[in-house]
Amino acid sequence: MELSNINALYSRSLNVLSELQKQSSQNLANIATNSGKVSRSKFERIMSSISTSTSREKIAELVASKSELHEPSVMRLANEMAVTQSIAGKYELISAIYSQQLALYKLAVKGRAS
Amino acid sequence: MSLGESKSIVQSVMKFAVMSSEMSARKLALSSTPLKEGQLAKVKADFIRVYQSTLTNDENSLQSDKMLSSMNNLATRKEYAPQSMLADGMGMVTYLEVDTAREMIDMNRSKRIFEAGVKYYNALSKMSSAALKIGSF
Image (tube, rainbow over all chains, first blue to last red):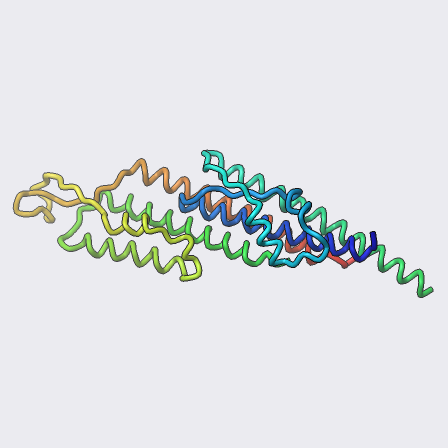
């Protein structure tokens, strides 16, 4: 696997996570207004169906189509909070790895120049 | 990698929670205040004005017909108090009919939703700053 492909994959996974965060925000809005069911998509499931060339719009469609609707429960606010924290954690982790990857690139370029 | 949409949804939810809390507080304040003649219509108009001014057109998803109709159908109760200056010919005074327990629960719920919104917002801010740090090594 080429390094550029790995970087594209990191970028796609960050896109997936921001779409999942949007879905979670909409769930919060539904909880506030007592309307609708809670929709939930799994990060791993979305990641398994995208490639390095999948566009952001396509990712948004996938998140919507692969979501499962759940009946609202009394714990849904607490659940949503846990989900959003988990997404934020994953996002930070992937962005840190992405960052490390770019640092390696920089090092490689420097090494070649000297 | 835009997180802006999520942020604006959460901001709307927080505004909604504040508005909902204000509505409950207003109802509780009015529950023990006698209403003058024609004041009920003014109260209804005030409620709807607060509701509509809080949420912009972009936040239509948060506007529920149920909430608007509950504001339009505010009920009243009458109590016998002939000594009151606001008593009618039969000695009855009009009050706004408020389920105080329900309103207290709603206020508490709004508070929790607002707190959740703040936590969401912080999580989104952390995500944005993590994204900005990419490549800064």
